[in-house]
Length: 361
Image (cartoon, rainbow, N blue to C red; front, side):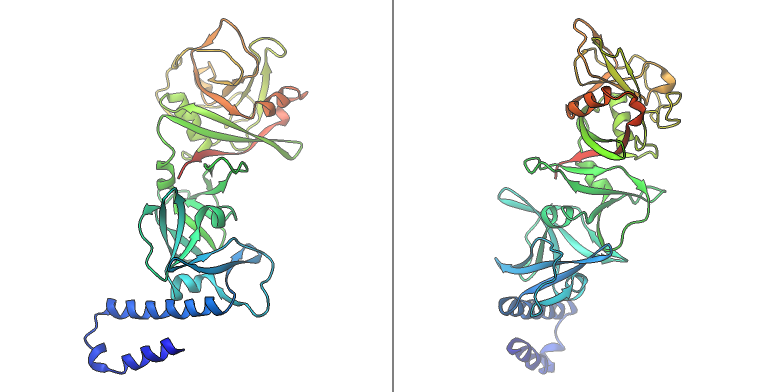
């Protein structure tokens, strides 16, 4: 109240205020709001209220290093004495909000702005956050809570892709899920898809397939692709859904050489899901394109029929002394899941529940 009174008295001096530029006055007002919020945080428990689906979450606000920081989201109601403010009030009225990713001794920052039914995050960049601003951890608060989606403004379908953290806390990559033409949930944070896609890389790329059978997600398969090859690039685009088709809901079709050296699983018919389809989504793929690689467990290769080039096979047994000239990737995680698929009586009971590509911020 002392700060506000002093500020009001200063504004009564019309000679001063009449010579202020609009941006100067805005800075004064913003600084005053920040100091008032600082006083509130020092004297009370202050929480930002965020709507998540059909319920609310609460982020505690603390003060450190001349900035406010939002803590981890909680679903339990704060105490009756706590001060609760809608999150959009912070963004619109109280203090600028920046999503932050700490990278060693420096930080990447994205300004938050309000949009209809949610919030927009700019591309991350190195910058200093102004004093009396709010910081919200992008990885540990927003993405962990499932509140961040990538939006492809150039996709005529209106494609959106959720961004999520991996279960392994030692793996700092993020999962950028397949682009889908579906309405965005309310009150989420939107990031530019083109920015996140630019972080994927253009040579060695990692993608994932979530496999389901018995109406239960059984595990995730991570594949490292040679994205410099046409088939590797095509596999990547069918994991991201950028051209429309994707591997979502496709079945594993059959097991070849079952029980023998060179055993493999076939999948990827996004057209008919019965082995008769799987046309190329990239033009100009050479039937014999690829680098000969020894046939070992986990090798990923293309189908040898030109009109089914989107189908793929994954070797589950070595074939010593033999190579595959159409290979373009290698399974890095999840061979145990694929071996479980081989053990099923009908591999067509297995489908790709979800897929996408890994991103490193």
